[in-house]
Image (cartoon, rainbow, N blue to C red; front, side, top):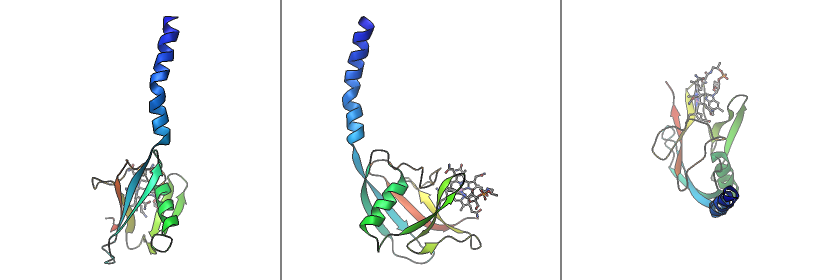
Length: 132
Ligand code: B12
């Protein structure tokens, strides 16, 4: 009996937390940086649902600004979507260029656009750069 009451009370206490999580939306900002082609730094902000992935934020930004923000991905059989191009600028294997994904602290994400979950209010940078 005591156990049942304890379980019931615990569930009751957790309920507001669960409801708050499912209703939460937050802004994320996307910066597009391409110093290789001397392009102007571009910044976009959108609102995403709780723990949505970066690709979802990019799609929302594209829908809101179809002329100013467009991108292409290629499906990798193992790792999911690979970001091939942003605003018409595509990575190139021969030139060793690619679009790198950087977290707010400037370090690269350890997963691609289809898996990365931005933090609330995080600024993620898409940086056109080279690999060695
Ligand atoms: C080389 C390499 C790259 C090169 C690939 C270019 C090239 N032509 O060689 C470059 C520098 C472009 C690269 C980029 C990134 N990579 Co990388 N990469 C590797 C590495 C070291 C070897 C891949 C390889 O050559 N395999 C052998 C070949 C024969 O197999 P393959 O299937 O043909 O390989 C292709 C895929 O691996 C693909 N690829 C490489 N990285 C990534 C990342 C993602 C998300 C996708 C979808 C595909 C992909 O490119 C390879 C060549 O075409 C692996 C780690 C490892 N040791 O496996 C990480 C690895 C695959 N990369 C990883 C990551 C996270 C990235 C980035 C997202 C990093 C970032 N924050 O920017 C970016 C991709 C961004 C984008 N534009 O979408 C992760 C993927 C983990 C995951 N579950 O998502 C790995 C496993 C490393 C890690 N951190 O653990 N990568």
